[in-house]
Image 1 (spheres, rainbow, N blue to C red):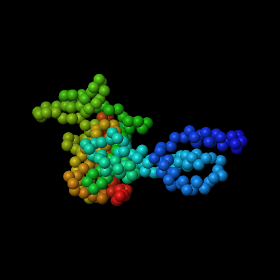
Image 2: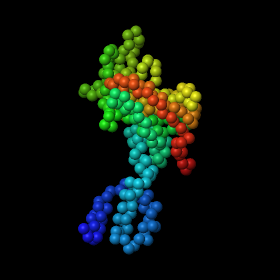
Image 3: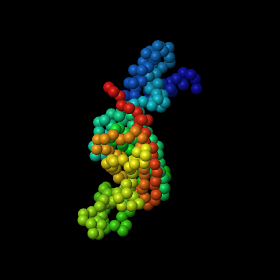
Image 4: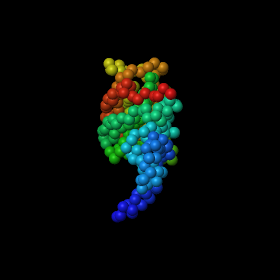
Length: 257
């Protein structure tokens, strides 16, 4: 292929590349003076900017990419209003912490992928995955329970089942994460000395979602440990035990603007 034909192919390829506007604008602002001096290049100024934007998108982690990749930045992500404007802004600035912690048994993996930590709140994004990385189905094992409601609509699970316990008033909710003993917590935080921290705990109880630990206003310690103690996930019984160290000192800090 001649040099001229090669340039034509590359030019056509670059013209067809779609670069996110926000990322493209940031790259242009940073490098416009540099490229303005390259008047003798085979490509036009605009095409050079697009080509460099593509390279930057692939090689340089930016706030725009952090925003696109962060689970917390998604518009429909919330948990009892805990994913507020401050959390969304942190995600936009790339201030959430990517993690890759997995606990596996019976071909099912609890996968923690991202965390946000502030003085009185810790939010963790999790996925419950099959061996191929896809989410496990949203289903439950209700055998042996006095079911009040199976939580299904048109044959599909939409909410957690409820069941009654003989001798007790009302009903109980069957959690997606089961524990070995009644009253145990499937996930909890301790301080560096092993003391269980006094927090409220909330989770979305589905194959993907958030787990939140929130205090009543007092600050959480800088160093904590997340404990996982699960013996059932949805309809699968097994043993998922593990510990994940959390160090708020290593977390990025918000800007002071």
